[in-house]
Length: 232
Image (cartoon, rainbow, N blue to C red; front, side, top):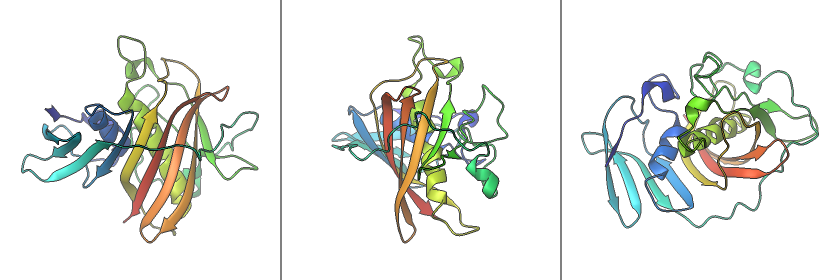
């Protein structure tokens, strides 16, 4: 087995979006809830071998160095923030408050054209300690069944939790995704209006725990993730 991450799905300019890469690897393992630990940035446009043993899937580079590890876990997502129904979002995304570190990121990059990137721009919600944005998946993200591919659901949950984590960083600090645990209850179809709510829980040294959930605009939970971000 092997994976290749096309350049379209970058996070930082020279590596894959962490959520997309994690989601792509997670699909190879038989588990409803998957945890992926990223050990180093996943390179783009390179064939990356995968070793598997005991339901543990290890993505390596061509020299055998570990890039990421995926395994099924038993995880209860019982502390999710509720959907944003009946609330208005701020007009300005949170990156307007600070310099965006990766402006071409597949998920949250403002320099990506509609239909190319996901263009999920997390915004503050007055009266609540969460971030949120609306998202309408493009048809290019779906398969023959009309459903958004799972790796794009993971990508959609990635950066919103990262922007929530950024609220716990000092000026000038940058953080990258270190671990993502996600479950998908239902995948959206093309052009289905959705909303993504994200939050940060705590910081412990360089590690920041955050989360995100994908809902319909009516409040139905479709997917959820817990993330750990690592300050550089």
